[in-house]
Length: 170
Image 1 (cartoon, one colour):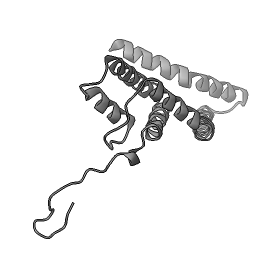
Image 2 (image 1 turned 180 degrees about the vertical axis):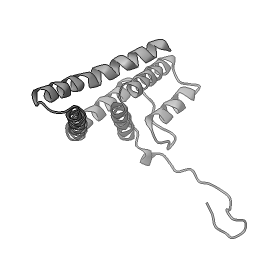
Image 3 (image 1 turned 135 degrees about the horizontal axis):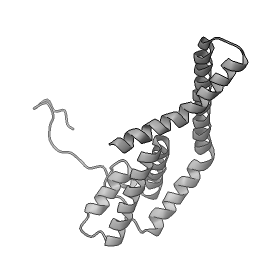
Image 4 (image 1 turned 30 degrees about the horizontal axis):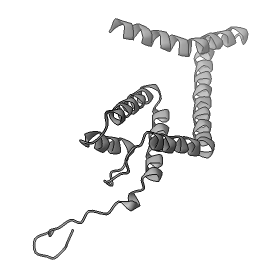
């Protein structure tokens, strides 16, 4: 636990330290009061958040415009080369599909190992970057929809009445 606190303190100092130094240098060179230090620090941090937001927005836009189709085609080829079976259920999401494939008694061990590897990649992406994880899962889900469309799967018919004998059928 102590190691976590030390790591956190080091990260905070590395993140805010350069801005404190820059704010102090500005305060000394501008011959200002100590209140200028906090104003300068606030402006520098606000600029950092602004540029961080702009950078993330640019990455998101670049992925949507340029890289999304490449990622989807990569995953379609991955599903094809790994010989994943076509879907038989209308579940949404690649990892629900992987659960069905893995729980199938006829699933080969090779596919189970591939699914375990994909779960590890997903876990790593969740721990590294939230936005990267969203992109990863979105590309996998869209690729699965193109690899095995849900329109080809018949809709299960439900029998029975809802609300008693009113005749409303679900």
